[in-house]
Length: 399
Ligand SMILES: [Zn+2]
Ligand SMILES: [Zn+2]
Image (cartoon, rainbow, N blue to C red; front, side):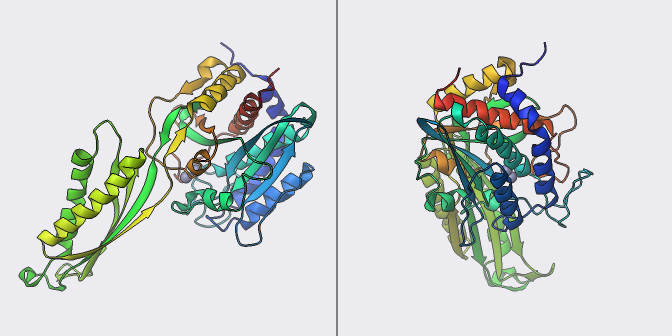
């Protein structure tokens, strides 16, 4: 069965040469969170070539905002692409691989930006058919993890003047086949909080452990004890992850350290569970430390909230994607993921959806954040077409 290619896919194919050029430029010059200055300048110049008047910020925030106003009144749809890269040494072998040592677009944000510019190219040429307006949000610092770029963008009024009614975003996903889109109503991505636990011990000779608390032993008990929160504090049908990603302490095999530091993450979906896990973690850590006569200091940081796709808007967009790509190529994802996304902050303000842009090719798709991650170029066409189909559906001007 030949795949359905809707009219937005056909339009997007015509702008593939430009999207390819943008993508190569972004991919060759990846920049870390809050350092996206070249990327910002490239986005600005691309938007200007489309006849748009992009807004930038002179306070170190690298976001770029542009508005495409239609000729008729209607809702304002914000389309968001993230801009930052990762501290990964690229091993894709691509001709346009990273020129910045130890930096890589390993999360596909180069694809997100290029697809959004492709969609903008088509929209800028179709203002007469556009109801309301489309707001283009190029957002920095998605990978930053705690503050992120979405919060600062909202604080700078990216949802005002004109006021945004809906927001749509996408992320490349190697688990979804190339040419398909994954959608999900309800909880889709987790809240991600971070903890750092400093355990004070009695440093000294490892042969005399009885002289004071052993921070290594206390740290070990805490790592194990935290898993009891997952198995006994949370409701078994409500997903929670607690992981310790770093343990730092000690200098030699026969010296007990003064201090051990644990650094980890807590992933949850429900706000009440998020609160409960923090309280329970603090209590559990203190009680384990007290039982071993050690002192602890706990720092707990709230990162991105959970991403919930509102049912109504997600249903409208899913239907539009089905008519664009064919029903078989739009997959309703059965399970949420425990990864986090600061797009969640936009969905706290207005309805919309965040969908997964398939980039998987059977047998040879590296994962996100991997040094081999290389989404195929055709994703640019599908990504631009998906944004356009979603926009049209939300603006209610389908033919
Ligand atoms: Zn990422
Ligand atoms: Zn990403």
